[in-house]
Image (tube, rainbow, N blue to C red; front, side):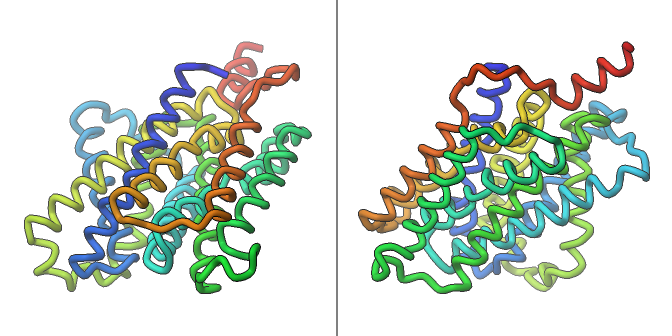
Length: 307
């Protein structure tokens, strides 16, 4: 595994972990989850488009036949997973919502095996079992009286993990044709086109033009969004999609720490054990094995052209 790519992914995921700081503050100003998602993706797109238009216009080149890639990253992943994650934060506490988001690597491993034929090794199986056990403990299914969460909160929390996984799948496929900058720009374009007309955000004129809302929205759109996604997508060039999602497990760690130390979230003993189980699973999946190195999609494409 490329060490530089690993560090890029880790840093991007750490920035993702700061999302709760901006989201909770915007909730306090009266914004709903879908409105916060709209703020995030629309500001991210405007920032990316401005940068690309001024610095690298070639990144706007896109073939219509590849629109499904960006419908996948933009709507199936970004719109759905953000709505589900922000709703889970509202239904439960930030720490638990962040951990449920990280059922994503399990979904990525399964889908990567089917779509990209990535090896489904015993290492990954053990990691998936650890993730499942961790989720059972985190949501309070064992011990039965530990969790006090709604079924809806649990479902949207796990749903956020599935939506999160879809970005790695569609993003990996798109990388065989486009740069990380192009993918990220069109991802947020399609997400914005889907959300801005339907979210009801335009009726929030007073809140939108307040200084607090503006600064928080800019922070949300730039720090844990534009910068984080550019870093993650760049790292995805050199790392298997299943392993990239595993390495990014630093996100729930950062989010959980923010939840505990900033928002005073309370975690029960078994929930802490569950978090450790999930993190252990993703770390275990990232351990070196003696298997052959897998050539990623961009590298395979280069070899094909040379042949």
